[in-house]
Image 1 (cartoon, rainbow, N blue to C red):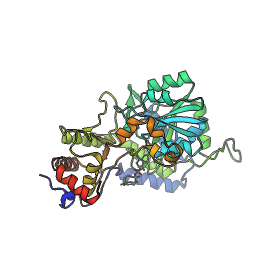
Image 2 (cartoon, helix red, strand yellow; image 1 turned 135 degrees about the vertical axis):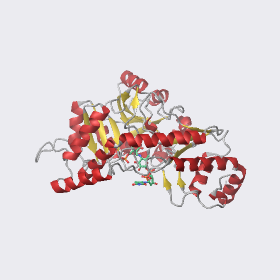
Image 3 (cartoon, protein in one colour; image 1 turned 60 degrees about the vertical axis):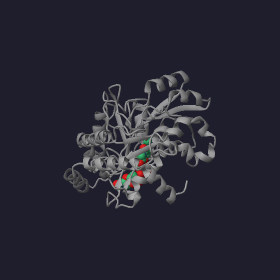
Image 4 (tube, rainbow, N blue to C red; image 1 turned 30 degrees about the vertical axis):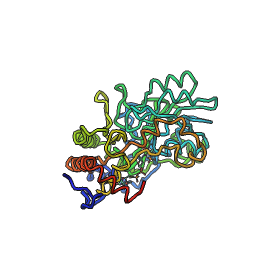
Length: 398
Ligand code: T4K
């Protein structure tokens, strides 16, 4: 039986094992690109590397326009403003806090809809329930890279005269009904944060097929400048730097290797955790393109021998820094918790699922052997659940 640190053994890993260790790509290619940037002395403001990254991203996703930004949060803010969303915008509560903040930051009201527990994505039925005369749009999120029900969302939007955009921070390299994510709604937003599958250190992009919207966002990310000394919009500084684009481009060129590593780890987790009552690894549709960047485990506390929080405590003791994304849901974080104290009444599935999720380490920095060790730790903890629970109750009394 695998010894457990929570019960007094040495931790399985001497160093912390993070969920989001960055994938680096070809270091020599990256360094050569950075050298060129330094030689050119053109460091930001839509330089040649940014332009190439945008062209290659648009090609990869199959859209007309790609506008890179300094991060996805600013990209969301610019897209929301360019679409002229007003009043209330409906989004899932089960997302990273940036989705809600991007609305609130502009003094719009984020209205939280519940999730479909089978997909973890926004539930179209719940969207219908929270539409009011003040609603101007729907901001869907493709959680874990699994697409929202875009058909249902777009049909609601058409019927009710709403705009639709998507937060696709998790979804570069994924498809829906055979079409790459990036081409749905009025526009979609990708994140290239260091912890993302494709990274540009920090970075994001809005992709769209709408020429006017693209032009507007391009101006908005550069203070609204339409030429020397001529400002035609309220703008901000949302630009991506050349060095970030160099990293992004290099990362994009390694996409197949990164997906292969993610997929290998995902399969190893699935095999390693198979047959454990109440513990399931979420599925990715094999008929679609997936990036497998998140390994997400759902723990049913009524069936599994330990609950989610207990398993996370066991893993942290082993230096496996598993995460509880996106617990407790945006509606339970500030300022939404104070502004909308009753939001949870309409979010039963979000509350239920958010308390069951564990996200496990993966990516190129994690080997298949490491995955096997993590799986045996989970198995061992569940097998010794009585002892583990007693120990945890002593350390953190319930
Ligand atoms: N929409 C959605 C749906 C999102 O998930 C996100 C971001 C956004 C919008 C906004 O995108 P950006 O504005 O960030 O482009 C992390 C990321 O920071 C965040 O980008 C991501 N979602 C979210 C899901 O995860 P944290 O605060 O939970 O973790 P963080 O950044 O501390 O990193 C996680 C672990 O990775 C760390 O414990 C250590 C390790 N790590 C981190 C960094 C930065 C490394 O090993 N190396 C690194 O360089 O948010």
